[in-house]
Image 1 (cartoon, rainbow, N blue to C red):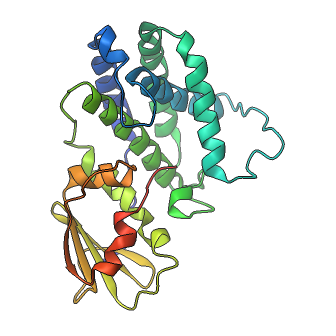
Image 2: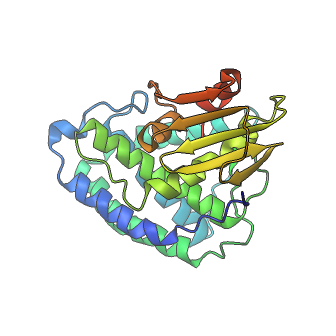
Length: 262
């Protein structure tokens, strides 16, 4: 086993945005209004949310613009604050036409990619990865987290409109990012031994609160998932994980409830 390597994905932002623009340009009027697994959001709402994440990042990184926060913004925690931001933007974006949303993705997708590429991956990120329990994160982790956001919401649009997923080149680093939530997920679980997670042909081991790449010997439990099921599970989709569990199933429960998004 070995320590997990940094996840360097800045080169994926441009092609992923190109895939999104191509996808959105090909949607019918009815498909724009199709429901998605993202709560009450339609395809148009999810596309608008993706635009918001790009524009907010570009405003902060390129223009050094951080809007003032209202008093007590984080009193309820990071999650409720982010949910309010997202909800407010999606509400405002009902005024934008689908064409306008796509045009803005063509403008701000490349701008975001440029800002991601300009970051020192080993500097301290301006935003810690809260779902991994971080109070401070390296920039590469924050960038990888941003890629998972862009990717999994595009997959939601693809699912809602019957388009094929884009897994080649993306699913591996997305899963690698998501599993970094394992130590935080098991932080309050008394585990005297190793927990192994296998997703497709890749394994990770959690031992004494530390995550490793590779499979440790004699684990308490080994959980095997497909990549397709894993990303859906870790982004709160209510699905049958179809997991293969070998060993003490009690130790699989936290993993099967793990969330790697805010």
